Length: 302
Image (cartoon, rainbow, N blue to C red; front, top):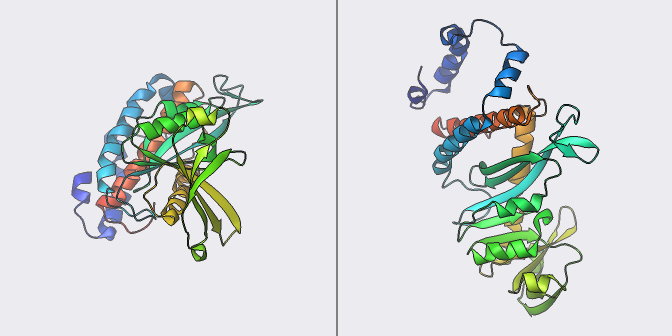
């Protein structure tokens, strides 16, 4: 039965019945037995990974409008992205193109739209690739928010985000040198400790980021830890800044889902083309599940 027909069914029982009937249809698709690992490995080696990347981007274009009004943990109308990187260990002898220290690794750099947890940008590199270079590949949307881990604190690149009209929220490094210019009152009962306007005073940072920054310090009552956030947005309530960074956890869940459910820790081929092919297919499956969840009105989480 066509997918378009399934999207109009109201009964999950009917959908499950259709899905159970799919294996019986495989014969008509030309699949007459078990598919060997070597067949998949050969296909992944020789079919250009860009075909699967294009498929994933087409599906992403379908998925994002479906989740345009999805809540994500902060009361904000603007688009909010989380950027992070995860590493997938591989054998250096099998993947000599992916070195990382004394072993092999593939990095998956991902920009996630927090509404629906839909990836909008993905780059697959070797393990030695500097994560900061990903910021040079992104086109920042004016008015949008980019939530970044401390590993992306590079003030020259952050200033480019600021100049583009976009906003960033990140954690300050412990050795960040700055001077307080102005302090705003905070409600300490909410966990807030500081809401300040600051200027960087480091030898290099004061030149690479010449504008003012906002520093928000927050105490997490559950862990009793103090977090210091930096942002170029001066309009949002300080508690919203802390909430935005907490929402960054969605990208960790995305990486966990990909690794556990789509099994991208083991590959059917070990060339760069084969590895990228398998990861882009996994991304396509993830987005397909997100599309099906929304179109079939399934209440369960991904």
